[in-house]
Image 1 (cartoon, rainbow, N blue to C red):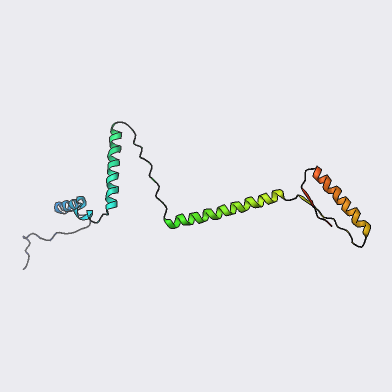
Image 2 (image 1 turned 135 degrees about the vertical axis):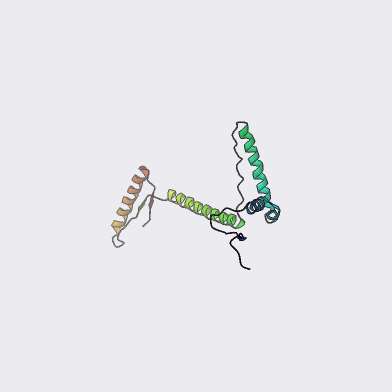
Length: 155
């Protein structure tokens, strides 16, 4: 069939930027607003979350209408996964063991002597041994009077 110049064209042009027809826009609005097909896809927990959110929003709007300020309650913290809790427990026990070791070492250092007196003499010379030991005893006594912890190794 040959079209004549007097017959109107029945095809609609789909140019970019062209406005939608009224039918297409109303169908899009219906799809956007309808929840019959999308409600089955949404999980039950998501539906309860949305319901709670709507309730909080209504509460906030009511308080603002009265001139008050809405302050939401703080969220309760979610419990960490079991693997993370076990890891935290192990890390805490390691840290506790490290602290106890440090306390033990500090305690040992606190009791350790500040000065060690070591008598050195020649065994071949009998008179030297007595003199060195008496001098070491005198040095230890003087250091003890000066409040220094000392240790004398016997010779």
